[in-house]
Image (cartoon, rainbow, N blue to C red; front, side, top):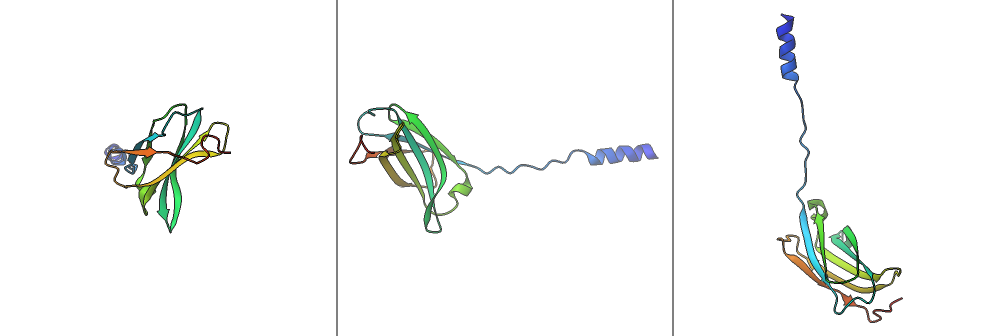
Length: 132
């Protein structure tokens, strides 16, 4: 009597697993350009901003060190990062060893990226390439 009961209990126990919820993500791909060659190595910052409560807040960021442009970039964004408001991409170029911004660009992008690449043309500041 005990043996069938023990077998029944072991069969009923089994393994219990809880599925992990993974949120789908969106890829933001793009190409960053600058008119003319870079005079020296630079650091390029790509920041994705979302409008939340009337303020632009960063939701994703990455940095690249480059010696030539164009640069292809790729950011993965979750639905939580895309949840509210409009989405903007801000890029800044600084020469390595300097904190001065040499070139910038900011533009609104659509939330549904549709696999299309964003083309960013960096705008050099008036003091480029000698901004301090």
